[in-house]
Image (cartoon, rainbow, N blue to C red; front, side, top):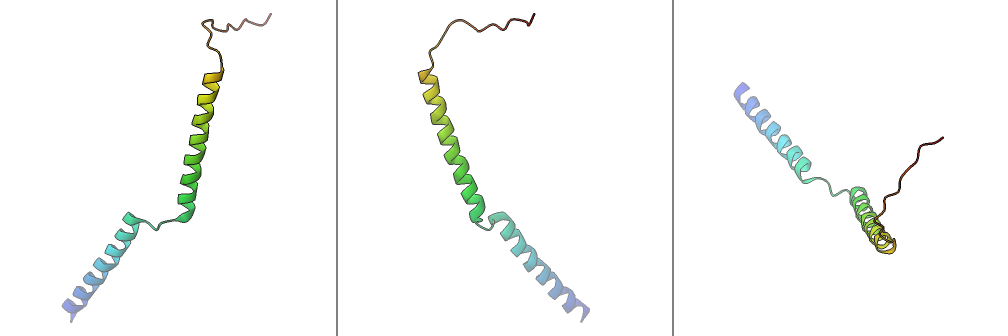
Length: 71
């Protein structure tokens, strides 16, 4: 009887661990995380476009701006 109990316990434990491992590895398609990633990507594209526009508008100067010490 003990042997049968151990066998059922081991099978049940293996099944539960397999299910928890599958959920952990494959995730639960969280819509909030997907929305946050999409927003992050959209803001990154906007920032990249803004940087490209600002770099093309600003004139390039060969002189560096020097900061003078306060008197």
